[in-house]
Length: 174
Ligand SMILES: Cc1cc2nc3c(=O)[nH]c(=O)nc-3n(C[C@H](O)[C@H](O)[C@H](O)COP(=O)(O)OP(=O)(O)OC[C@H]3O[C@@H](n4cnc5c(N)ncnc54)[C@H](O)[C@@H]3O)c2cc1C
Image (cartoon, rainbow, N blue to C red; front, side):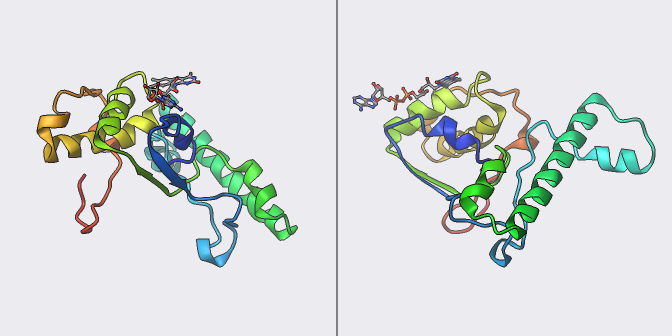
């Protein structure tokens, strides 16, 4: 998930979390293919690249997507340059943005999941959180309808932006 999302979800104290450390990962090393993984934000529209290539005027949405893309590129370059200057991960992490991909494990009991999902699937929640929480809720509604069917969610959230996740048996849910 997007690194910035963990700040939102870890506010729910009756759950347990493990989050990939940015203090011990040097993304400029071979283990990470020498690059930082970024997750595209919900607003991102990748069509700006082809429009720019063909000289088509970019829309406002495409212009902001281009800004985000160029910013991530710049961060990655700076990160690699600082790494070459022997900066340790503790220093390198200071320039990592919210969009950095990070592995998060979260466990909780059913009652707390219901509470968290009822708060975090609403329109008021940050889109990057909805992106993860709505598909989780929908999966729970499918597998445990008697418990989760009365939890509401933002039905206007674009389905093509739902996060994809796999179950333990490797079957893909969305
Ligand atoms: C849309 C949205 C916007 C938000 N915006 C902001 C914001 O702008 N700024 C901000 O700071 N936060 C924000 N939050 C976070 C919010 O303030 C809460 O911190 C968050 O929702 C967790 O609340 P919770 O009741 O689920 O969890 P918890 O605080 O973990 O509480 C869960 C339940 O357990 C009980 N509990 C928890 N710990 C203990 C304990 N040690 N002893 C006894 N009882 C305990 C609580 O009383 C509660 O009943 C936002 C949340 C949402 C959903």
